[in-house]
Image 1 (cartoon, rainbow, N blue to C red):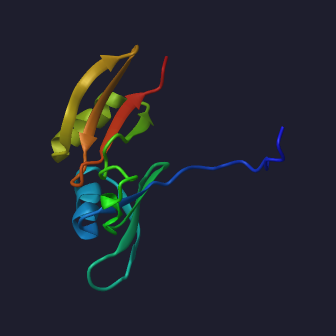
Image 2 (cartoon, rainbow, N blue to C red):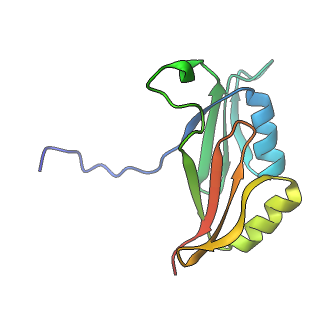
Length: 132
């Protein structure tokens, strides 16, 4: 084995480039039920922020224009964030009631139930129960 560190990696926190940090914060808080962890700067239009719900966190930053590079896909293209939950039906009912953008209704797939939502920037988040 190559000399890799045995340090335990704790979690990943995606940093998403968005068109408006303020609008994205509002959607994640009001519709998806996330709590705001921090925002920078404190005054004026936010440029960077983090939200969390349970053990799931997302960071947002203003669109830096890097998606126009030939090696970078359009924002959200080909990426789906999977959030594992204990009761997918309850989460589905909550997010439908809150007005989430449902892109895939609750259905069975691979011996489990799941559904997908989109945020205001086209990022897709799937919610699924753990395999039985």
